[in-house]
Image 1 (cartoon, rainbow, N blue to C red):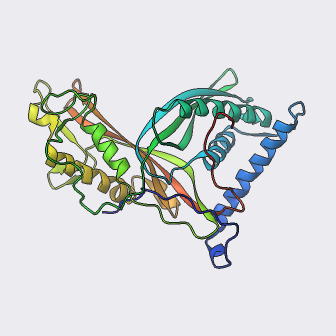
Image 2: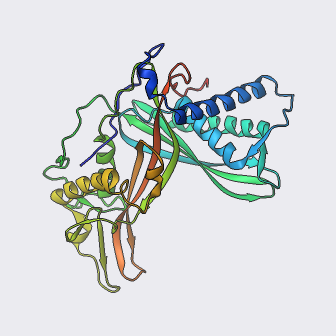
Image 3: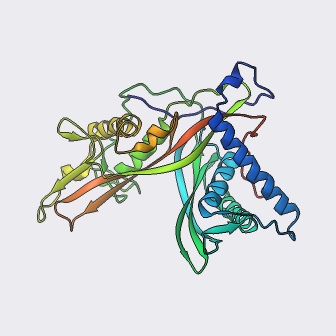
Length: 344
């Protein structure tokens, strides 16, 4: 089983050796050029707020510019986190009839996004924290305003840890949890948690270390994409790797069915890893992976849910997975990220 993620601090070196320059391929070089071009234009707008450039860009280009520049400036997805919280908001970008946005309006939305995410990050109640990433999703355009949904993910930092072995036993005696809805443990003790919460924490805190970047390079991520799984997509023999049970209408789920005992927790913990790191990336249903040379999981959100008005009805762990392309770029071309502060 392949597991990726539990991560080291980026390495900062002034210059890369000639052999290291070979890792800087045309694709990340073009991406860095696009990022820096937008960054320079944004700086010009900030320094000359009364001048109008007349430049426009498509709404998709605007969304990509804001998201990508923000993440390479403030995101630390390569560090270790035990758990995460996601904050959401809506922002609106003025666009014309052709779906284009003025540069000045794009910069204004970037500033709004920065203010929103800064407030989210500073309010996160973690002793040690870090900002992972921000994702923007375009919605409908109404009355010349493009609705954009913002998702910002902040994590509780972990210290350095060893990579977990394959088939690692994460859950031990007494760690028996009801499947969802914060129903607590199987012994009916209230814990404001459930099996899906505990599995999400386990997946997050057991991710394997990112490779150390070569001297003078850093990792960046781009083009985040989402995949949702119901739970019945993959199995091992007669058992679903992700928790999923269905029954006919009229039948009730038993206590044993809604409870994931220790062995079941470990089975689904390892099953989630197999699905996330092996099965989904190699499944032709998801062609996104075939277009990139290196991918990484940014977040796995696991929710325990009941659907009792469907046929068949079912209880399951819904997986919301966020992946991205991972690329190496020189620190000399794109500086290391900085922490979000009230002064940003």
